[in-house]
Image (cartoon, rainbow, N blue to C red; front, top):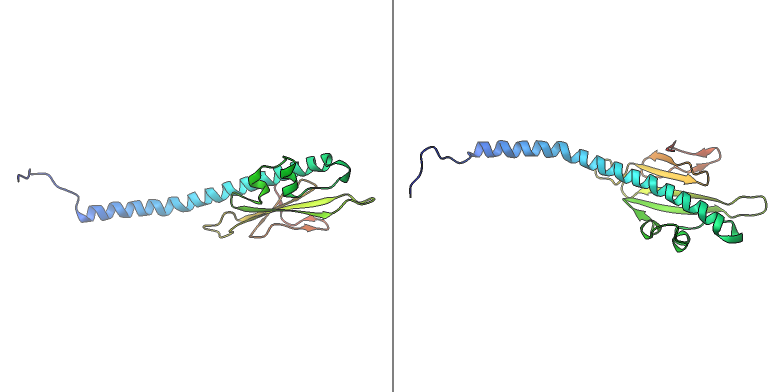
Length: 161
């Protein structure tokens, strides 16, 4: 067995330094990656709420004499929503549609749609804001696990649109 002079491997110290550098880079990159994913989930939730608003408007005008808004299942049956969104969970958010006022003489139908994150944990959560919209089609956002709610003067939260 012949060993050439000048051939050396890495020392233990050199390997530990490389591992430490990789650890520092990972500690910086992983939180940014998770923040990007939360931001993408929130953007998807806003887009989904817009899609539900559009589907509600179409359902309202095409549902015949009822002049009522539809549920997620009814809008899926009318081919106004895709099957993923109609199931109620998409991109880390849970969606719900409530028809809160049925049409009556002199009273218009009303609905509300909410989007709440599956997990609102600031580090590993699927989103940090909940979203709300109604027949006005204005989307409201509110930091926290709960979606904004309807009040007599509008909705709580900050308008997105």
